[in-house]
Length: 117
Image (tube, rainbow, N blue to C red; front, top):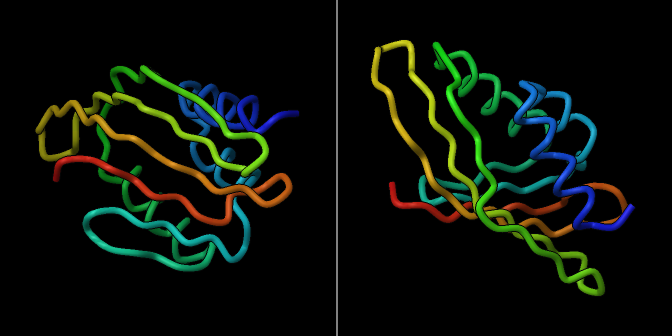
């Protein structure tokens, strides 16, 4: 499976409500995740962050991948996406971001998110 196919599979899983399954399958134990709000290191800490995010969602409305690509030789993928959710506080938001993933073998070792926040 190419890196592009792996990235596509992650977002297919997300669209089916399988965020944690995708995380468990595709993220390395030593993963580093960086976003404008900070950096998290290690799979357990990053997974806890994803669980907290999911626990704040009341309803998932939409997920669209608007761009996806890969540099197979460098083991790098990018995904531009839009997600619309309603949080438990009643706030309905549309979030747009670009995620750039660095792969080693079958797992992501670094992921950086770009968004306005």
